Image 1 (cartoon, rainbow, N blue to C red):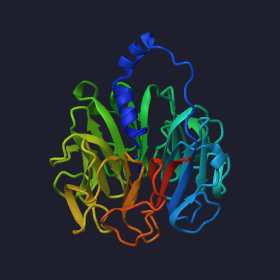
Image 2 (tube, rainbow, N blue to C red):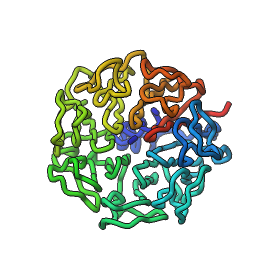
Image 3 (cartoon, one colour):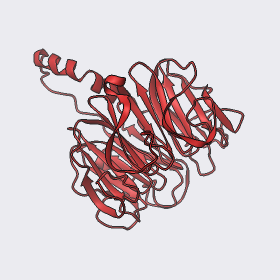
Image 4 (cartoon, helix red, strand yellow):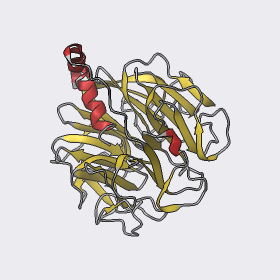
Length: 397
């Protein structure tokens, strides 16, 4: 339900320009010594009842707190409803929070309020967290999964059971981006096609069938020759995809207008529909429980869908097509929680808006709209949203 410039824009451009980079690298001069990356640590805020904040306790936090693992130098984070994931500087993965389905990947089923190391993983460059399950991607495009598999969301070719340690997802190769929804998974491949698997009860896989998939399946009519896809997002029961021509598509549940096609319906869209509006070029997308966001080419944030907690706009309970979220500019990335939003600016500041009863916005201001600045201040390089908590990576000066 998950997304900073390094994650989204960097990955998209990396995929689109891979061939150019490969050729250029042959003639480019080799620097004498690469600069050491800046030291970083993770912070968290919001609901903490399962230890998902990683601060050594189970209390909600209205203001950001440090995740208790500074020595790991976390570079990327991800959150679900009750657990969180992080990538350390050495490419290992750490997890904390609820572990009833083995979603922490440490071989056990005991919850943890501090980070524990996920077994057997190295070279990881991306993580994603769904409801009771986790995904990780290696730098060479392989995917690993662990946790509950009741709907086939681990992509192992079967339904049911759970796995407390990472399992490799089939023969997947060339994966450039992964997304975890509530009970479904998505992946973007280096040929610009989309793979989907897991729960499909509300059409969130977009293949027109409504039938769950136990293994990765190419989404027909999307990507490749039919229009390269360069970004994806998975929400509660809906999904988003951005084509290279700027077309934004959505599918799945639309009971709150989260597909952005100008309608609401109790009947799901089992195939992609166009998100309407004049939002222009799309830089990033994110999907929450029943709402969605995009960042346009000018750094503005647009939102649509459920607005019962003012997670999209000042007024109204449902927003059926993209509207500008007020008070934001120079935004590089956006993340969607269950009923709140986070945005990261080019200056390293985060903003939060929407539901705040457990401190989800991280602002310390009990007002859902307009967006307020995260209480931690500047120096943030990465943001993520769980169901009711937020996460970020901060450079240590």
